[in-house]
Length: 526
Image (cartoon, rainbow, N blue to C red):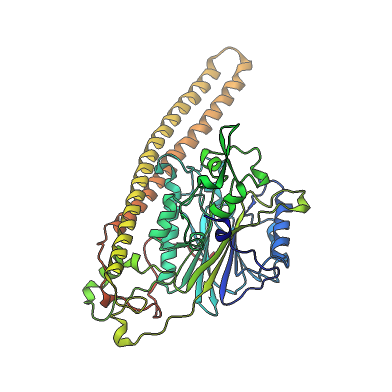
């Protein structure tokens, strides 16, 4: 893969937004209050760079890890109010989801969907359960596309990338819920954009769920049609051999261009001193941030389908797969941005993540088909060929494989939850024994100076035991039931008949859309 063909040209300074394309940015700003270093200074520099004439005006800017009740969020809004007069922060959990969207277009509607599983409450150091990881959406009316839904999200990082998929059961449920929400947006006849920090590399099961269940397309991969969309390492030709060290020297600049690395890059000042796993070392970082998109749902059974067969026909896996299209959007350029360190911060990177920018061209609407021929044509106005049927069958099998892997991972996570629940009950019993023994010993032992220590030990043991009891009874029952619910929904989708749609039940993309609804959709107005 050549560097010149893979890297889109940088934007012209002062580029203005156009109605003929969508320009989108996603960036994890690492703005956690009390935790992130130089938070206020970095976010101010991010705002100034977004406001700079050398930075293009985006249609949508999706931010993660922004602290809602902070001065830096308010100053970011104030500095960018002229470019992005419409903003939305998605409230969730105890401290907010950390998700925000800046929009060039007026926001007509918002939705917030807190994820069912967000890590364990006893893992205070991770904080996912307390902030309430979520996905949030805004709806805007674009002059060319009509209604557009833009989703922003941040998946949990717990579970990493290696080892059994059951370790990432919470992230898998989040991916399934986001995919369902994206699919429901498409069913409402809307183009759908999904942005965020997915904490997953391209081959991950989470990305497969978003592609297969959500019908989403990766803008980065679409802008590089000849490249491997699942690559996490550079090919041998792109690396130099370190003869003396015995190791392969990896070009981090090339990794940005060819692999889309956004996190753990050696070019990021915050990576220095950070312990990296083998995957990050082999790829000079990881690609964790994405911009995905899809067109409206175009399935609508025709009048010559018997009414009793409509629900089944409209819900088959093959039907869903064959009708997942890009709509009128086509990604022509995608690149990693916000890679330059800030001179105002003495060469420090603006965040521990780099951003991703994608340009989606808006294609002209297809010619309207006559009503007499519409119900006998394919989505592009051509009768389905044998190759169309083969592609449909292949996609249906891909969905079946992905859902089977997800169910297996959730089953493993469910079994792990039961084991951990039993261990917490065991810790509760042991702590209760220590607490009772300490209190009794403080009464009968003769040394008065030891009594306060025994009482303190009893109090600590009692607190620990109460926490373990609460965790075992309340949390792990919650976790098991949520996994059972996700497995039930996944199983129902996986067992749907994989029927190939006939030409009589497919209509052109230019027609009206279906209604909303479907399993897994949720959330209210944020």
